[in-house]
Image (tube, rainbow, N blue to C red; front, side, top):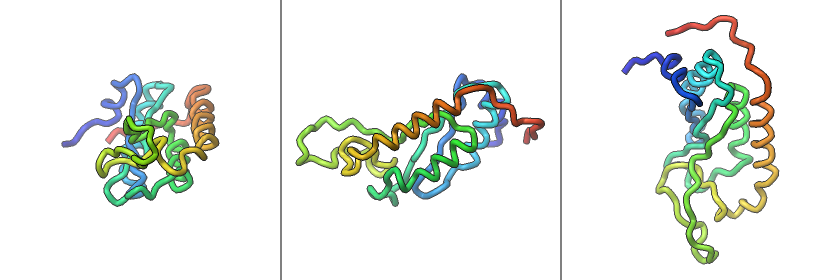
Length: 147
C-alpha cells in the first residue's frame, strides 16, 4: 500500500525504523525514511528496532559481527537502539543455558549468551554514540524530495 512515509514518520514523537542484522542489511530503506522524517520534523531522538534476525541467525551473531551495521545506522541518523530481542530468562541455573528464545526471530541477545560477560565495552560504546548523536540539532537537509 503506497504511503507518505515522511508525513507518517513525522506524526511520531520518536520516529522508529527497523534494521535486520541477519540476513544482513535488510530494510535499510525504512531506516532512511524514518531518519528523514525525524530530521525534517525536528525530532531529537530517532529510534530503531535493531539487530532483528530471521531463522538463519541460529545463535551466530554477537557484537563484533553486527557492529558495522550499528555504525551504519548511527551514520544514517539513528540515535537510539532498541535491541531485538531480549527475552526474559527466568532460570538462574546454568544447566538451562542458553535459556529461552523467541523461536527463530531476533538476534539472541541476553545474559545467557557465552559472550555476555564481555559486552560492557560494547554497551558503553553504544551508549556513548547514542548520547553524542543526540547533542545539538541536525542541519544537513537543504532540500528533500517527497515521493
